[in-house]
Image (cartoon, rainbow, N blue to C red; front, side):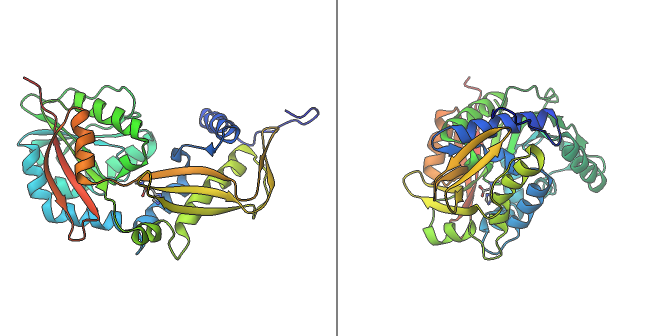
Length: 324
Ligand code: AVI
């Protein structure tokens, strides 16, 4: 910290402390990189909802249409009586399509999400629309050890992880999550949405929309840093950068310095040379076979696959066998 400079933190909270610590670490490493989880404050979550409706962003509408068309077939893979665990539940929009295909009294629904207030609000809405549905929300980070409510007698525990959210995990995080899920879903299975490798133009457009919503979503990370942590940097010092990296089969999002500049955070000064980036997100794209191989290594047995006519997105059923 520079002598004589007193850093005033605008709003102190445990969340801010973690954000500050992670942002310091992100800016100190080479290359600079931070977890995409910091996109999702209230503004970021709203921007993400807008992204989902963009004409260029095909994943949401493609997955919704797969769920709409095949919900009965998907529900049939799951089995008669189920405890349905949704990982990273969010707005609970997609699960409604599955629930519509299942007898209400055959399901105990366990949405798991790290954000308590959002989860409880979404559950209230669901309970209003699905009277009689048993809902047991769990506030937890589903990527870490957590304890699910016991599976009701006679039910199979099945997981639901839509949205190609697994694409935002590093390969080792994806492997760790799948292993954890295979263990806790033993005897049941996992229904998961993945975004598929496709032509680079379609991928590029999905993360570089004409309306600039994805750019605003990316830049929101810097707005948060300014508002919540008092970070200082030139207002036009960074621009949105998103491109497909074929070597890793992933879209990379970065915030790129438009010129040499300094970013001050809590008394520390971090330099950026022109063109240097803060890497903010990876969005991995898979082939069905590649993902099934990953899931098999984690303990699943691949089952049915539903995909659209362009083969842009896939929903996979993975059996978590008991090994007996
Ligand atoms: C949440 N996740 C699956 C989105 C994706 O496509 O990787 C996040 C996103 N980033 C930019 N646009 C959308």
